[in-house]
Amino acid sequence: MKLSQNIALAVAGLLAGVSASAQQLPAGVVMVNAATAPQSQWISSPSGQILKVSGDLSKPGPYVFLLKVNKGQIAPSAAHTHPEDRTYTVISGTWYVGFGTKFDESKLIALPPGSYYTEPAGVPHFVMAKDDAVVVQISGTTGPTRQDFVEPPKK
Image 1 (cartoon, helix red, strand yellow):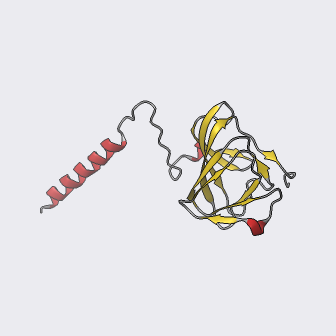
Image 2 (cartoon, one colour; image 1 turned 90 degrees about the vertical axis):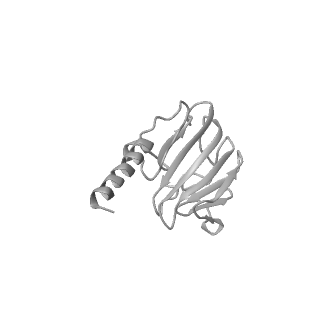
Image 3 (cartoon, helix red, strand yellow; image 1 turned 45 degrees about the vertical axis):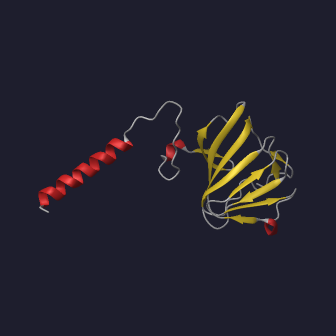
């Protein structure tokens, strides 16, 4: 194959990729890639950084967001509950969760990427990112959400 044919094939392949990525999404379709989301879309919170996927944590209705927690950060540092059922999917890193009314590192359960768990409303728990940075997808059944601390938050 001649060089000009190779270049033509490479350009055609690039154009096909560009047209697929530039495709207009149908109304209602939501696509979020945590790895490529601009830093400006992440919002700082006491628990880490939040990237809204759908819904609104402060309003009635279901919601989904990504939580990014840095290595060694406990998010939050005290046992707490939430008023609604939640589901968690670990996207990257290892997420640690424990259940009880006081933070106890010996009770933490390691959840690697791809792990999923549910958290029923009102169940006291605590979480931590201790080995590496973590991104977790959190879905709630009904907003607004909040953290009700069982023990006082550490400063």
